Amino acid sequence: MRRVRYGSTGGPLFLEEVAVPAAGPGELLVRCAAVGVTLPMVRKVTEAARPVPLGGEVAGKVVAAGEGVTRFRVGDRVTGLCFGHGYAEFAVVHEAMASPVPDGADAVTAVALVRSGLVALGALEAARLAPGESVLVTAAASGVGHLAVQLARARGAGRVLGAVSGRRKAEFVRSLGVDDCVRYDDDGWGEPVDCVLDAVGGGLLTPALGALAPHGRLVAYSSGGGTIQAYDLLVGARSVIGFQMALIARGRPELAEQWRQELWRLFAEGAVKPVVHREFALEDAAAAHEAITTRANLGKVVLRP
Image 1 (cartoon, rainbow, N blue to C red):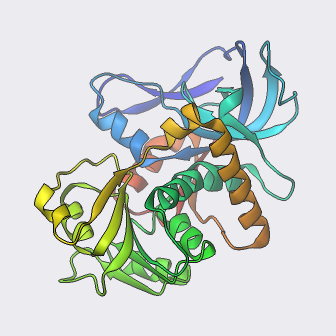
Image 2: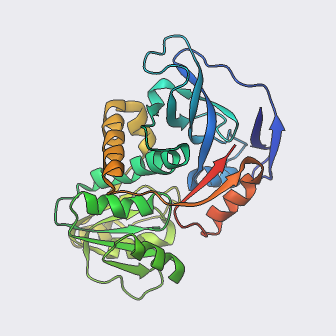
């Protein structure tokens, strides 16, 4: 089979021919029809001390099931998180990390919706967003962000705002139905909000925290790092909460499954519509990564093996 790999920090990415992996106990072997590209994986290529498998979200058909698998059979359509090599024609996914793809949804939709949607939904849960409260989403045009603004509305937010880097992204986010959109370099981000979902981190943490109303909550789910001064939290009794979906997936799989079901329900109802920026061939994985690093994407970036 073909898969994408890299040999040293920073790349370049290249295709190689390797044997199809086998499904071990509790694992599924999936013929990949779509693979999601995420900012954390792009950053691993450029920042990890040594090369790591290009894993992440995949969707396709089960072609083999390992010993002890009970929830899926050969031929089932699934999407799930691959911790090994996922930029490939075949990937191994643990049964606990997989979920069925319902009729009416294709593999690309599944990849665009489920993993990014779980992060967005989990961040909203961590923020304890109450009906009628206001929420601002940074990186609102990203694969996670464009779902977060829709999910906030579906969950009863009274006012939904997006924060983006440029005009083109602002137009895209407004098309999703937000009440307003701000630019990172604006002098102020308007009326304070109850919650901020931050996917950027770094130097953006200061204005993001400043956008909170008294007793507001900022959920940080970025891999970009950043520092917050304790005094900035004391002023206005604000809170900062960290969120990582991998901890939920590993430690509370029943909750992850509950969120998956909510995502598919909202998709079926038309309340949430994932947007795919572009589909890239497997051999064009480097171009897919560039779309992420240059912040060119509007919605999800997907590989098609």
